[in-house]
Length: 212
Image (cartoon, rainbow, N blue to C red; front, top):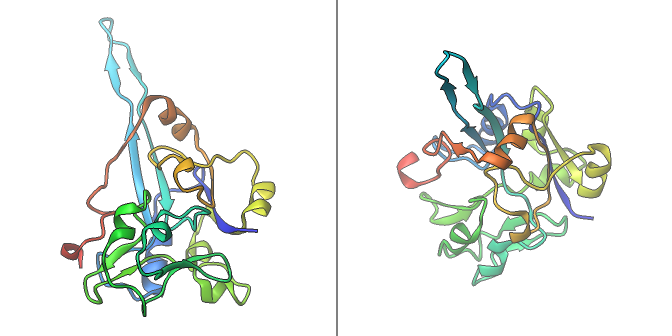
């Protein structure tokens, strides 16, 4: 069965420990990240003529990395086969075959792969494949102080964590790539599904040469 991530949106405080632990474990330079935390905000606060104040404002955080999709767009567009699914079912980059064309970066709706300006090749979360191969969980999962992340067989995760959705705002429609991702939505995320929300930290979550 496919391996994937579970994310408990009701527990995440946006502390970034998952992203920091990943960057430290992978020895990523400043500004590069394989796991990102999206800050999502929306709604409004209004004052009526009688002075009564009402609000529909909300805010929450979404931790996201590569979702090791069943129909990965990055694999589909890669002209050399560098982007591939390994024996564990995790989507990875073969550095011996990557030519740095960037098609994977453009195609992925989650913006998981990005071109490393130092090597000129694609890089991304590989699910900590070397840890998973020996029965450990990805470093981001182990690091989360609120236990908002989990990883494993996606069917087992679904049984262990009922009530999950395949996506929350602002993540793309799950039908695009069939991601191995389960999200337990918070009340704020449920509200955002009907009224929309915006990412309030776009510069923080962008991988580009200027960030390194």
